[in-house]
Length: 267
Image 1 (cartoon, one colour):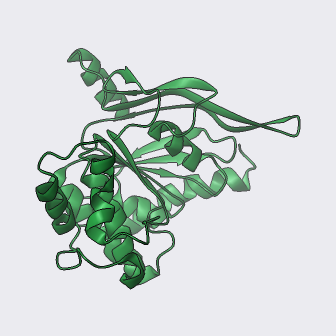
Image 2: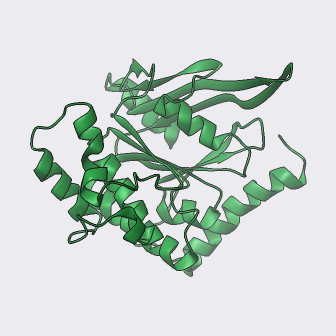
């Protein structure tokens, strides 16, 4: 299916929303070379919610940082709407696993800070209000981060990105530090926001259920050096029920590929 989308985009003369072309990344330490990513190619179409699934250490966070412009690839290119990514830009906003809020600023000030730093203050108040409402934090605008639960703090981090109206939202295991119940609620919250806004997103995770529950596509990565093992189009309608026969059957298919590569020693 991804190849059909690629052919359709080329036929219409327009680039994909986000394109990763043969991305490789090496780190050099103590005179040795560590290859973290190798020849990763991926197309993300407009309104896709792509989940990159891989074990710890496979390079998925490094890949996200390269897309965000926080890391430079050793080889390959990232393009946003056909333009080569050369560094950080508000068109690609990254939500980290930990909210990383400024503890001396209120919820409202944390959300608006990025707009103020780059001087994008037109309709700032309305945009901040809309972003806070979108993540369900109306009434908490003047709260300090120390008075928020983990889930609420992550909602602030999400609002801080969404207020910039990014063309691609990048999420680095955003719910990994939360308890199971809160994580489930936040997954639903993310899907509700995506359903309203239809933004393009790329989320990295090591949780197979999370990838299936959230994603429109799942990119399964190999062990280090991380490469694309397979791309699944998720065949399930929404809302998805984790206990349904269809969900369980698809989980078995993804799990078989994900775990078989490790049992066979495949890299």
